[in-house]
Image (tube, rainbow, N blue to C red; front, top):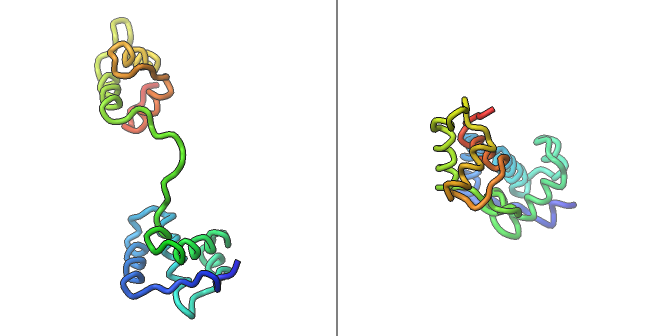
Length: 149
């Protein structure tokens, strides 16, 4: 894995953009690390992959992959995450909001609180969803910082 095959040459605007991301620290750690890799690899006096790997405590392959992505697809593609594979969430938006609202409501007679299974059954009964597991209800409530244990 050689840095010679994937040169990083940042123009002034790109360098300032990357430095701003690193200095604010408001982005994801992965993005900031990618910015640091590109800043260290920049130009003819840029550090080697090994030096960058040692100074940033990242895998050598990570440095190589960031360089390669920069040279092939440009700056934005090199620092941002690509879309991940996997199934999209089944319950979001209005169904999730309605399930959360039920969880915040008064529980059924004879119950001190809503259980996850009761919430799942109620969501099906009210035609909010066709089917839902108690674990999916738990995941919805977890995102809203509600705990029903």
